[in-house]
Image 1 (spheres, rainbow over the protein chains, first blue to last red):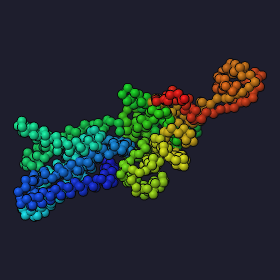
Image 2 (image 1 turned 135 degrees about the horizontal axis):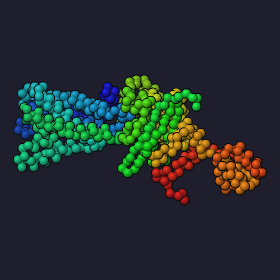
Image 3 (image 1 turned 120 degrees about the vertical axis):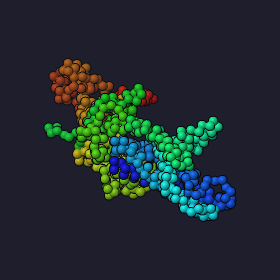
Length: 250
Length: 308
């Protein structure tokens, strides 16, 4: 397993785009947090944007940007290999497929968790600076050191893992990148509107990305329930992907 | 044979693969001995690449392949057992050649110094830190070969490694593979370049439509397609004499006979006994290409029409 992990680390770390995505995954949400604070300052606090106080709802506004960028890293774990026929090279070096699957999974989790932690810290710092600029600062918000931060981190990791699982299942990297983004920004909001008109209050407990974002907003035990549903969607996709990976031709 | 038992490096046992209704590989069994270069021949669509993937467990099918008596997956470090080069461009265009090899080295603890050594061996030192998206096919083949030999495996499996190489590179590859085999390793090489294979391989496995057609040394295969040519004063009478002696004699357009089932000495003796003057008598050895064409004549998956 050590060899497969080392292989995965070298696979992921020797491509420039990985580092570019990591930097973007940190700077883009932080940049938006600053932008929102600046907009709030020039509108004398009359703006209706997301809160910039480092709260869970603040993370809910900015972390999806990070997740949407970083999901390319998750999709590339398998997508890059199938796209460039590297999977045969990989499986010739490591003929046991389950360790290969687990090593990819572990390395994506590790890289994304570290990146997400830094991104959350960057958002908090940006919100603090933004608060100072807008003269609305209430000081450092330490919520992120508790469950809010953990939920934010889990949200980004699970989002990326869904991209990982979709690509592993379909062997199609563009689909693995686009599907989560389209679901989150387009499909689920439309379904949510329909659900709202029909008073389907349970809908957040079914839709993956809406549930994931709800986990960052609602707080308490309910947040963990939403996060469990979000992670459950990853498992629903990842388990058949793993079984197919064992059975398919490379 | 010297009577000693050679250690068998790769045993292919009854491997089969079906794609829909097409039997791509049909109960194929053969051995790739160590110390020799084994050529893997067959027409387009014969199932060579599929067989190689089945051997490595990359494709799922029936049968099994043992590397030194065990399936590849049971070896602790597969890259030290068999090095492979199956696809023409098996690398990420955006990862440098050196980093690609460092990635492959992760399993067996191969040092960076070995990576540089292998790059020098295949002549890619100058482009080691370049991204291979601009590599020619020949350079890509060299990088693929570098990856295959990186962990000094006991066996090599190369699918059409000479494609895209210039004559000098092909000559280099031939020498390299011969030396690699002479060091006691098993080398399996598929190729369409039969003249090249004739110079490179000691042993050939020929398949067509997924089935084994021939398995033996180049000499054995050539001998099976060889005959004796005899031109005489009376071809008809000589043909009758040879046939009655158990040989097969087929008249040729130049007045001679193509005789199989007899040596030159035996044909000469039969002509002498029949009182026929012999103008020309020679052993004709078939080239690998002629043998290949004879063996696989109707086994081509996608045959051309008549040449106009």
